[in-house]
Image (cartoon, rainbow, N blue to C red; front, side, top):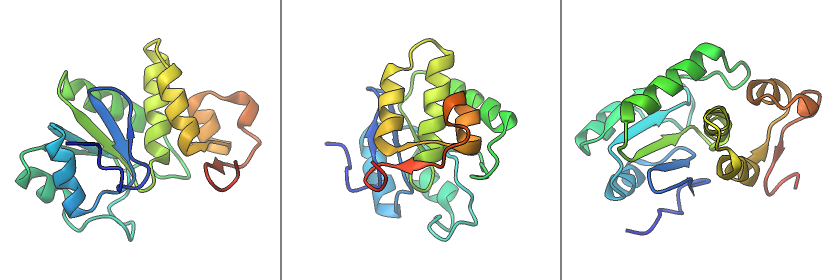
Length: 157
């Protein structure tokens, strides 16, 4: 199956990791068709675009599910540690990580890859979605951008 590019901000980092904004129920099936066996959701279930029972929908498709509700205005080190644990739990299996528009995710994936010593591909993915400012610049360690607003691909650049 080809990548389901109709999903908001769908990105493929490598053969194992894909990311996106919030997939629909049908798009979760497309993700499963890619061989994904684990879904990590960094969005809040209370968001209007969130699925009513994403954990159940993912389970029906034979995938496992981890929810790490990251407050967009206040990402924490505890959130990041939970993300690292979720990625380790996924092991070598294909994993899909999403939030609502793929901003939280690209920041988390960039930091994770950078901390592991291989961030070039993840930085390119981050920059293709947005350039974090404020608390997210702090979160990813970009001191030069902490006083800047977020810039979103297709809007500000």
